[in-house]
Length: 314
Image 1: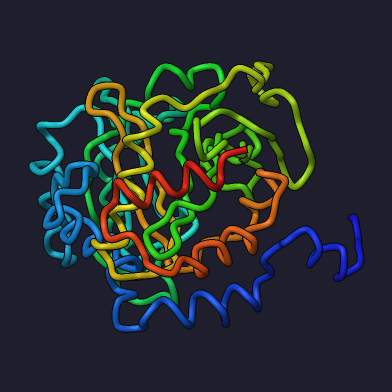
Image 2 (image 1 turned 180 degrees about the vertical axis):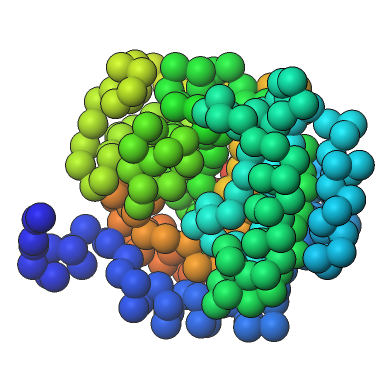
């Protein structure tokens, strides 16, 4: 464990949790807008309304009596993801990549029966995976066929890009890569790799795992020196447009790259974590203050993205 003086943290412009909560989340995120991000089903509905590209909703299970219909609902699809609408931290997400001999196959190769899937959905409805254990809804989404550019940089799971958006301006980004330690999930707290990305180009800057710098993926052995996220301009525009979509001034947008349809919004977070600063080797505070200092805010996505690329590129 490493320790340092608070003055050194402030000098590097690191945003702490208290300042994030008081100066940015409380100030710029009206409470009545939280359901648009805390409930993934509502996020999906509002995204479709604003023509924000996202994964396709295949079905919704709201009540326990509907669980017995899962066989019929899932029959047309070889692959899909089942998620709790109000889950957090990746809890309760079940990803099925195919079918084999009447069984559902997870990305790890593990086989599940229909009864296993029904039990999982039933537990989701009862609130097992939800914030505060409240009764929930189970969503069935299309499976993301992640872009082959990440084939050498991820273990089993789907890589995603976390973008911090402040008042509609993208201010910092990182690529999250699953590992064996993170059980195939892009969750940094569970051992996934965070790769800081240059906001102007999408090129890799730094990489960390559990807060420590690394130079290659721990499972695949591939280095990050030549890693660059494709469709970067589209990703920046997609993230920026989430401001109009939600009305939230400070948010985290999680975006995935589908090899067929391109960048897709996976989910939004009104309380994005702070580890993105470690992955980028720079603090958020100077960038947030830069946006706050804009005398005449830009009203279009294109203008905001151009500003961010010009001022926050490494």
